[in-house]
Structures are given as C-alpha cells and as structure tokens.
Length: 260
Ligand code: PGA
Image (cartoon, rainbow, N blue to C red; front, side, top):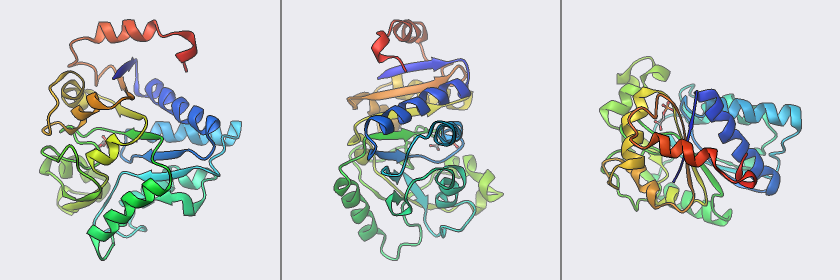
C-alpha cells in the first residue's frame, strides 16, 4: 500500500482529484467507484473545478456508488443519491444513464444486489475506487465482522456508524438500520483503490488498516492484499501510525514519472 501523508485534508483531496482526472483523461470511458460522506467532498469540488475550468470530460465515464440507505427514496435529502447529485453529478457532464447508485427502495434486495454486481462486470469492472473509512474501519458500509469476500448485499449499521452519520438525519435514532453496500470482495476486485481519511477520529482505524493484522474486525485492513492501493491521509489521521517517517521518505523519493 502506498501511504501519502499530507499537511491537511485539502492537499490530500487535491492528490486524489488528480488521480481521478488523470484516469479520465487517459481513459475517457473509465469506470469510477465513488463514495459519499464528508471525506470525498473536497475531491469532488476540485473535480468540478477541473470540469468547469479545464474541460475535464465525464461524458463517457460510468460510475458506481458504494452504498445507499434502505428505505430512502432518491429524493430524500439524506440519501446518497441526493448527496451525489448535489455535490458532484449535477455539476459535471456525466450521463444520467451511466450513473449507478444502489436502490434503497428496491422491492427485492437480493435480486437488486445480484444485478448491481452484474452491471459492474458488464461495464468492464471498476478502474478506480474512491473510499472513505469509518471510525470503526468500515469501507463502504462493510462493518467490522463483514466477510472479507462479501459481495453487494444488505448490511445492518453499528450503533457507532449510526451515531457518526446522525448529522444528515438530525439524530442517530433517525438513521436507517439497513443499507445496501458493495461488498469487501467487490471493492477488492477494483483495479485501483484510493482510501482517504482526515482527522484524528480516523487515526485508530487507519493505523489498524495500514499497520495492523488483516482482520474482518477492521475491514479496511484487507486493502493490504489489494495490488494497487493508495492511502491518502492528513496529519490527524496519521497520528497513530508507527512508520510515518518511512512513508514520507518513500513519497519524497518517488520517481518523477510517478508524481502527480
Ligand atoms: P465520513 O464517512 O467521510 O463522513 O467520515 C466515511 C465512512 O463512513 O466511510
């Protein structure tokens, strides 16, 4: 795993945006795996800027989002459909028919999840997956003890995650219990994973994911087995890592052609 520690969330987000932009320029019909939450917001803002000011073209891009709350319509302001359109899709030229977000109102969840997996495969697989991380180490909504081989399915949120996500709903009690999420195995099938984490609240989860043993108790730790994983974090999220000097040393010595 490549560990990139930046002075703040903004600079970390710029690097993530440059990764996405480079892919989209090199492969205009790239398939992006996208995340919601506060973490990727600055990255989306920068990609919108690149679209508006530099003509970054998303017209042939296909997207798959990681997850959605069960029971929320796309119009619900706390739904991840609303989040993605408000913060990203409405501001770029992505085609609506190329956007895929799990359907929180699906009448047959297992059938929907199977179809979601098939649609990813039919699109050629995900080239680049952007991830946040939960304070409990979840990726997507794969909570601790999730199968590390899991596929898209229904999951139940932990009390911690419902607490963490309370803001969008007004209170933790209003956060749905169930979600549809891409599985850990689905995420592991993507060609490149970028995991972002900002702030000390994420420090323990990041330390476990990067330097801990691989365990379903910290689902992000499976990224140690991913062939191309890039972990981009700020100083706060790096506070519990033991080998920060080494990671900085490696990053400073990257060959010119690898730099973004
Ligand atoms: P956050 O959520 O970006 O809002 O911190 C991350 C996550 O739960 O994966």
